[in-house]
Length: 350
Image (cartoon, rainbow, N blue to C red; front, side, top):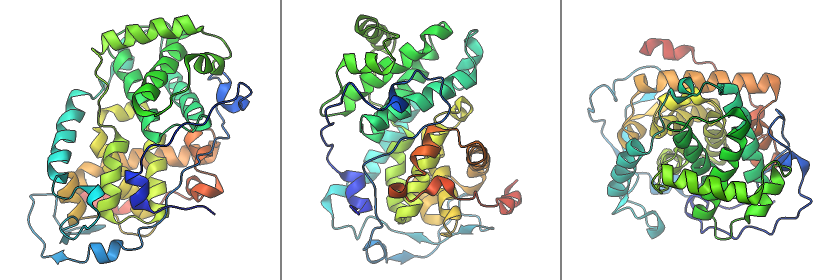
């Protein structure tokens, strides 16, 4: 079975999107009224074999306010994860400046948390259905994972400032993913493929017109810091195994279908996903290294981790989620089929 290292996965060059047949699987072209999916992803990740050697410099515990307060599920030891890095693709000398920039960027491109309350014709469940359908399309077209996350960010930011009829929410979602594909992909699918995916509910001209509307509304701001952006760094810093990295990827994709998660920053969502994935795979929960690198302490993680665990349990019982179906595949280690772990120890951080 084809595998590549976790390091290569996180810094890989974008591959060309394969030409899409007009007879694509109905799971990806059906209008977003379906609640179940059968999607898969061609790219997978493997453990970092040399991670332990690269991160073997253990430093004494330091005080970072409440972030490093000892307690259940927390290891206060801090490691220097960059000084021993020999792979120049990780840019260890620039990583702090890069992360500082991404944290500033996420503040300016974060969608309004309660925008759904100002959309009289929309309900949270509608956004969940569209999010699932867009993930099916992105997976079927072998798009980069980053494309899906950018598409969801564009969708949320547009809906946060423009009221739309419920009949047009799929058009906005389709166009948002097309815009994201043109930004992220080397060879994005043509517009007629996106129209076909909607079963010709919308024409190419309608999608192009919506593209102009969205881009003008967002002032062409397409460079964003998504949860996926932060997850790459956090998984590397945590030395995540293949299974842990895939589980955290599943959790942040699952979070995209819940508009309630918009109240958390993308960096916090990524941190919570890593913490829950580590706990689910028996790798601890949180430690001083991750607290220092992410800027998020144990108490900040409690609420989003509990919501992720609840969402995981719900989709596991109903089996109705694109992310659940995608990560139930053997090539992705079937991580979505796992049992969400107990979080009773988090009661100590109330």
